[in-house]
Image (cartoon, rainbow, N blue to C red; front, side, top):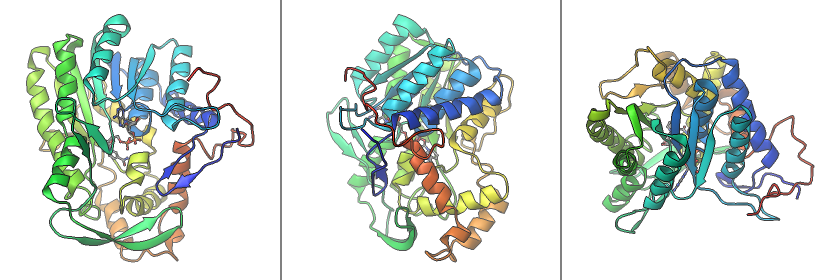
Length: 395
Ligand code: NAD
């Protein structure tokens, strides 16, 4: 099969196996180039390990800290004439590279929200990896089947209160346009909190603690985004923000439950980057394209793996002083939110339109990052090669 990108709105329905491996290996090379991170992080569970911030966290834990990693993600397997998800290829590429470097790496494919997956992780931990010292919670999902009630919750990416009209970007067409965003009702908001809030994070840590597979000094991090007031009507002050507020609540509850292990739970506030999840949020691609142009022009831009390498090296390594806000969150969005960067993004916001998009924003960079997620756009890859999308595996 000759594999080309097939883009449908904000997703690409194909993924290139060799390109995905190139993407993983590019990140590994970056982490190696930064040298080892001195830390006591040696056994790491990454929930949502196959893409975006979770994948980079796994790579930094493995290749920066020398940690054994257990990954959890939810993938579509390939067929003879249909590619798998990018995550399916990323997981294989990570495992191959890690094992080649003598690092333990196991990935479990299935629904992280289920009790069954929590049991599988406990079993795997007992059977091979040993007690966990860090859990990275990096799920981004539109749905969650609640493990206790069986109810299927669907998140809604909507404002709260009143309808808003905002500028947005059609990434494929390269068009700036206005979008009308209808407000969520109470049920939609509650559903979004059920999917993207902190309850599942709590369930995870409770299950792992009850099974006695957490090490003394155990830590857990969940990722959040706050951003600036430019995106607040659709993010921080919207349904997603409510879900993210719930992570803050959960961090407190989890930390209290970890007292006897001298453990702690923290939320880490990360910068805007291009991932499958962020591409799906209205307004965010326009904001991110403007942000990237400004950050790149000032030499301050960070790719996903660079950002996570800095998180581990400056906030999780031994002996560091964490940069915490008044809610106890780790702030990694410090560069994105400087007056210098935000001032310039804010100046450009009312000016940007379809005609000047290339000049004021970095649409090309956004598109390039988007394609990379699915393994496209790597100079080292022959995209005319006829490939078996199953990689010869029995799927
Ligand atoms: P992503 O789409 O790149 O990755 C999501 C991961 O979750 C994938 O590995 C996917 O397989 C996994 N997943 C989804 N549903 C699952 C399920 N039911 N069971 C098992 N695995 C499942 O997303 P991302 O952007 O890296 O987001 C990760 C976290 O980072 C989210 O909490 C997000 O809010 C946060 N964050 C993202 C940004 C950004 O700009 N992308 C910024 C700050 C914080």
